[in-house]
Each structure stands twice: as C-alpha cells, then as structure tokens.
Image (cartoon, rainbow, N blue to C red; front, side):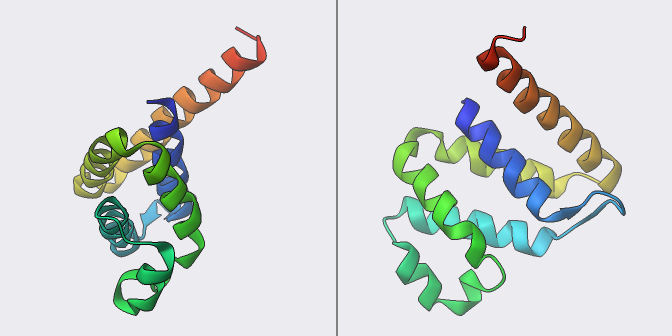
Length: 115
C-alpha cells in the first residue's frame, strides 16, 4: 500500500502546478490508460509506439511499468485513486496532495526512526 501511495503522490505532483492549483487532468488520464495497458501486459516499448497514449508522459513510463510489475494486486487501487483525484474540484485536489504528502513524509520519518 505504501508503494501505491508513493506512486500516487509522484503522479499527482508531477502533473500539477501547485503554485497555481492547475492540474494536467489530460495527462493524468493518460497515466491511467498507460497503467491499464501495462496491466494488460504491454511493455514500455509498445506503449511508446502508440503516440496518442504516450505523448507527454514518456518520462513516467519506466516507474509506472516497474510499479505494475511489482504490485499487480495494487493496480486497481492506484487507478481508482487517480480517477478520484481527477473527478475532484481544484481546491479538493490541493487538499488531497497535502494529505498524500503527509502520509508519504510520515512513512519516511517512521522508516528513519524519527517517530
């Protein structure tokens, strides 16, 4: 679950301008499609060939593929979380980002023995 939260946080912060509260919902939607493609057994090379699927998200393909390969059972959970994020209004998206940040940072502190 922790790895799912880390990937969720990485995706939403990578495709959000936090200063202006602007999200690239179109690119997060592509990420969801890429995750589904990886879940169906496609490789990053196959996804890259489909420019409509990979355009502007090429930099995320390797870590998304690694996640799907290592956490197949968590794939639906990640897709559902990203879908929920997409459906949320902008102010809620900022709160979700802050909440995810707290959980990711809290987990890092616990692993370092600071809690």
